[in-house]
Length: 110
Ligand SMILES: [Zn+2]
Image (spheres, rainbow, N blue to C red):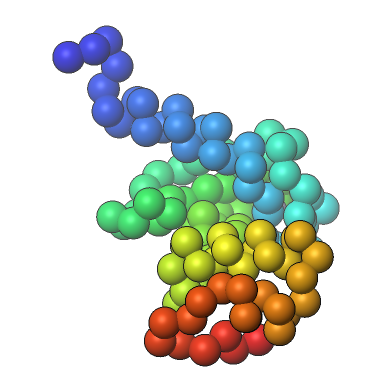
């Protein structure tokens, strides 16, 4: 065993992840600004990789990690969402993206 417990290691990882998140509340003055250090990790609330609870120090509210990302309430797999985001950011329209990303069961509902 190392000098750090798994829990401490996890907390540290989440601390780093917090830097890539932004406050999801639209009335917060740091809404959609990431890397400001205003987001802190609170705790894990489920088994999923993104089921972590974070808090915005600017407005004092807590939110789940999924809420701070496009994955919140999203039924698509993370892999598929990643493909979609990549296609769109590279200049493809929604239709082109739908053609590029191969759909297995659910059609793209945009
Ligand atoms: Zn906030």
